[in-house]
Structures are given as C-alpha cells and as structure tokens.
Length: 71
View 1 (cartoon, rainbow, N blue to C red):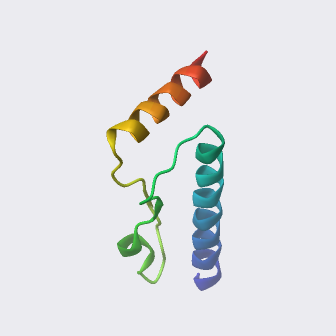
View 2 (tube, one colour; view 1 turned 30 degrees about the vertical axis):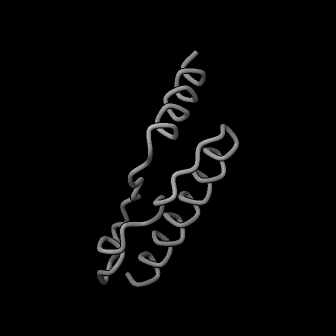
C-alpha cells in the first residue's frame, strides 16, 4: 500500500505542476497553489490541491481565461 501512496503523491505533485504551467500560459499566477499538507501527511495520502487565495487582478485573469476556454 505504501507504493500506491507514493504513486498518488507523485501524481498529485505532477498535476499541480501541470496546472501551474497551464495557468502561467494564460497569464495567471496563483502564489499559494500547491498540495494541502494535511491531506498528504497520512499513511495513505489522499492529496487535495490547494488553490489558495489571490488578488482581484488574478481572479479577473482566471475568469477571462476560463471564458475563452469555454468557447
């Protein structure tokens, strides 16, 4: 089971980096983006992605990027 936990943690880390890169490509930086440490600290991690807080300019860029993606 420990191997599976490591795989889940690695997948979560990879996903966070992928999300960070894609957001950066559309001009959005979420400074707090990362893994929620509490959810990865257990024996079998069940990681959650922490999107964090952002300022109004960042929220507007994110909303604009999502609007474009929806079209």
